Structures are given as structure tokens and as C-alpha cells.
Amino acid sequence: MSAEVVGLIILFATLAILMLIRIPIAFSLGIASLMTALFLDINLFLLFQKMVISLYNFGFLAVPFFILAASIMTEGGISDKLMKFADVLIGRIRGGTAMANIVVSMFFGGISGSSVADVSSIGALLIPAMEKEGYDKDYSVAVTVTSSVQGIIIPPSQNMIYYAIAAGGLSISKLFIAGYIPGLLLGLALMTVAYAVAKKRNYPIGKKYSFKEGLKISFDSLLGLTTIFIIIGGIVGGIFTPTESAGIAAIYGLIITSFVYKTMTIKRFKKVLKGSLNSLATIMAVISMSSMFGYILAYLKVPTMISEFMLSLTDNPILIMLMINIVLLVAGMFMDMAVLIFMLTPIFLPVATTIGYDPIHFGIIMILNLGIGLCTPPVGNSLFVGCAIAKLPIEKSFKAFMPFYSAIALLLILLIIFPQISLWLPSVIG
Image (cartoon, rainbow, N blue to C red; front, side, top):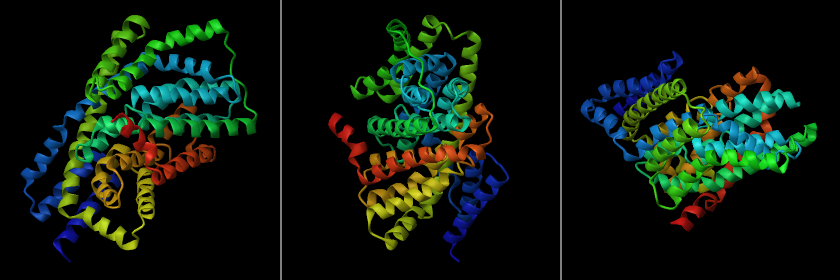
């Protein structure tokens, strides 16, 4: 048995054992990489250099600002105002509150870029409200959790930044722009399913607002929605880089919640800073350790081996992409999304580019696919948060999720077959 094969066994066996005994994933990746490097006699200086270089990236500076902006918006109560605005827009149809849930997730996703933040803030308000109106608990959770996937597709998306870094420095602006059409299509697909189920179960029609009430709610939410326009307009118009737009959005959100809405107190702001720092520390650890792991994979030529294996099975690009997506889908059920992006991008991106897929297009496919894992057991973070809010056992919610899983899967297949869904807008804007 060659040293490379033994090295692969040490790498993946160590990682699996450490994860099974519940060692945090960042430490598991680092320890597995270090043990393999010692066995293969790799210069440890190169390994630690990779850790540092992975964080020495201007694009990464956008991450703490987007995390901070999302925390400010959540803690400052902007999600509540967006919910009322969405209710005014679309609440007067069958299952109107469910429709509003999906629309407000679209709005909030354009601010926070986080699926879990979406479920935590919107779900805490809307899941109990939907139950009170007569919606079934499992349906309320399914709508809230699956619609939160929009938060990772519609910019700003932290996971798009992670992919850009893992892919070796892709344009974050281009990735952001490529996510708009798939994100909007995802929202429409989920709304179609939600409406069909609502009609079948005869769920109630939402509250009717007078013109004066609707105007007041719309105006009240406008300041919160301006955050989206700052991010979208700044990046698309070439006024800001993603990093600059994230910083401006965080400052703007703090000003609005502190001096206009007056919901941000000193106590709440301390909570925002503490939560943001905790999230950032976790992400930095995962990125640095994943870069070590990726270096070992490259040293052992794992991406080349997987590419050659898949190409030996078939030369059909669609079939190869379907195989990649099956692996991503299964992996997403068991591991955190950010970790998988850093682990699997160096493996599958070379395969995708070999069969003719654009790195930007593949990134949107990968992120949407792994987004499904946020909504599926056993390790779906958004699923756990939604079920915890509703006090509903995960196993009792699964049936209600099936139509929504189907809608996301259909969009994923369309993205694989039709690249222009994600690439058309970046090509037009340039």
C-alpha cells in the first residue's frame, strides 16, 4: 500500500472518529490534517502558512460586516416591520400569511444573508401567528424553514463569500449578481407550493388593510428596505465593493434602529456585538482549518482522482453534475454548510470546470444544493431552529416538508440544465 493511500486513510478516518466523538468540526479538520502531514513528512510551516493566508483575503472582510448587519437588523426589530409590509403586499389571498412569510424571507435574506438568522427572527414571530390563525404547526414550520433558503441565494450571502474564497478568489460581486434570479425563482416556486397546499387544506385568507393603514406600514418599512437597496444598488452600480456595502449596511442599520425606530438599546447592542464575535470566531476557525485540509487533499491529488473516476464512468456533463449533486445532497444532511463549501469546493470545482461548467454557475448550484441540507435531518440547523420555536418533534414535521423539498429540487435541476438562469444577469450587467 502506497504512502498516499495510507495518508488518505489517516486523513478521513481521523476526521470521522473525531466527529463521531463530537469534537468541534474546526478542530477535527485541523487535527486530521496535522496527523496526515506528520505521516507524509510535509513541512508543517507550509501547513500553518496556509492557515494564515486563507484569512488574508480582502473579500473575507465582508463577512464580519454582514454578520453584524444581520444581528443589528434582527435585534433591532426590522424583521417585524418587513413582515407587516409583506402581509400588506400579498396577505389577501388564500394562505396569505404563509405567502407573506415567504416574501419577508426574501426581503430579510437580502439583508442578513443567513438562513438561520431568518428562521430565528421571522419564525419567532410568524410560526406562532400562523398557528393562531388556524394553520397546521407542521405546515407553518415547513414554510418558514424552506423559505429561509432564499437567504443564502439572494445576496448578500455569507456562503457565497466562503465559496469565492474556497474557489481561489472568484468575483464576489459576480456571484452576488448571479444569485438574484435563482433566488426570486425559488421564492416563486415555494409560494406556488404554499398556495396549493393552503387551498387544499382551506387555510384562512389574510387580514385586509385599509389604504391608509397599508400606506403607513409601507412607509414605516421603507427605511429597513433601504438596506437592501444599499447593498444591491451599491454592488450592481459599481459604487461599492461587497466589503464596503456590508460596512455601510451595518452602519445604516445601527443608525435606523437606534435613532429612528429606537429599538436598539445599549444592552441589545452589547448582545449584538457578543453574538457577532462568537459567529466570526467560529467562521475564522473553520476557514483556517479547512484550508489546511484542502492543502492535504491537493497534496494527495484527491481532486484529480475524483475527476478521473467520474470521467471514466461517463462523459455526459449532466450525468456527472447529477453525481456531484447527489454527493453534495447527502453530505449536506450530515455536516455544516460552511465547512462543506471549504472542503468540497477544491474537490468538485475542478471536475465541474473540466466538463464545461462556469465556476460562478457551479457556485450557485452548490450553494442551493447545500441549502437543502439546512432544512433536512439529522443536522439541518434551520430545521432545528424552526422545530424548536414551534415545539414540534422533527419527525412529525417531515411529511409537510416534502412538497417544498420537491420545489427546491426542481429549481436545482433547472439550474443544472440551463446555465443562463444564473449567468444571464452577470453577463448583462458586465
